[in-house]
Amino acid sequence: MPLIQTIKPEEATGELAELYGNIAAMRGRVSNSAQIFSASPELIKQQMSFIEYYMVKQKALSMPLLASIRMLISDKNSCSYCVDMNASILINMAGWTPKEVEAMRADPQNAKLDEKEKTMLLFVLKAVRTPHDVNAQDVQKLRDLGYKDGEILDATNHGARMSAIDIIFDAFKIEKDF
Image (cartoon, rainbow, N blue to C red):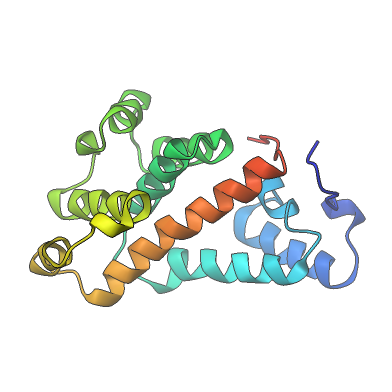
């Protein structure tokens, strides 16, 4: 049971019930990762907008790259909910094997991504873990591979936001529901 009160979908009313309906339509259900935000419907809206942007609107960053970013950021942060959720996405939606996921966790260089995406993954990990070590050559390397500055920012934002989510999930003891 989480440390803050959450509202179950069957107990939701008003705006929260509507938001839950939208989440269920988008994801098939209202997971604990959505319910943790039920104390603040505005945060649910922000989270839904964030997810929609990365799932639907931006086109340069693939689902496996984004799931790899989330999983490895969460691995470093010891957020087992997010590690397991993103490993499941890589296995069930991207067709990776459990061994391929574990190989990437052991060494991100082993990610089952092409060299362009692997370079982006390694950049985001560096930017989130040791931001003061990022330099102009790191960014230029991504540009040389064809990434636009907005795409570099999108990927880095995705990793940074994952750290914030990890903190929330771990602080309030979210329970696995998958």
